[in-house]
Image (cartoon, rainbow, N blue to C red; front, side, top):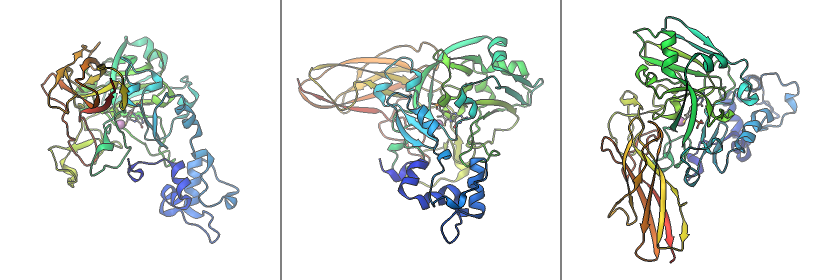
Length: 438
Ligand SMILES: Nc1nc2c(c(=O)[nH]1)N[C@H]1C(S)=C(S)[C@@H](COP(=O)(O)O)O[C@H]1N2
Ligand SMILES: [Mo]
């Protein structure tokens, strides 16, 4: 994976070329005086990001990354994640290698992290006493709820729900697409405890004119500008009314980890992870399609028709991604292992957005023939499904195992990537390498 394609972290940028990093972070306005010290608007921007003026700014060497911006705390939190690959340190973005996604329910310390901004104080402190959720907009009775209200005024449910980032698999795009270079692991299937999204909507009384929801979180914009939101997405009202959409306050029986949205987040399973707003503070009901940051332009959108790799697509031809496509992972064995046996159990997970997985096929002869794997039904809709299959290799040597899921509409994972400009929805088959020595 080439570095230039990656969305890089602030620390790495500063390490490589501090002056250029200043320029990138503080923009055109990173003007300097003759001795190289930041001045004018650039200095003001740095001050705004730090939330204070800098009395000794004349002593700050050019290209010094202010320690407060290095997000040590967030990196510390990341260290609690077990074996995840860090793709970016500001904002924190980390994925799970497939062999660590072998569990039916993804543990908190193995759930991927996709942040667009900086963590809110409340999550860093893990203290929800001041937390309130506002539900307003085109409703009859706007509400403000505390965490206790949420837990006591509505039925509480527990569901295993898969969340996958719309950009999972982007690293394989050619020509490459900008953004985090996710390979396979921007997906997880935790057990979420919360209230049904629709119970909240029924309590506020949604007006007939409502077409879309809008989600607002407490995370900060990378610029430090308090008036800017890193991301604010939503879903059509019909999706929010679907009984498996949650406003969740626990992940695997514990408060939601800071990096994954403490204290409360939406979980809109089967749709791009970006619809599952973390650090939730407000749900607004709208009578137009929500137009918050990352809803418009080409964010989380693909052309409404297939395009050849590299095609420049007109903005008006992009459509919002709704259900994610059918997909699967091989979680055991880990790729590139030697096995001293002619028989091997292969296992993995499969999921299909709003649909479910009907069958699972495995090939160990580069797709010339396929064998059916045993496939579990989902424990509840929108959970991923576990599958397994026993392979008997004819002789020693190098093999590839390919996995292919088919959803209940008969749609099958492709071998090749369905290219689109922003690198979304890569559901091409997962392949692993195995060397048989017996
Ligand atoms: N407030 C807020 N919510 C957010 C994001 C964010 O940056 N801020 N990222 C979204 C994206 S793009 C994804 S894929 C999921 C990832 O959830 P996770 O970090 O718990 O895996 O959170 C979504 N919710
Ligand atoms: Mo995402």
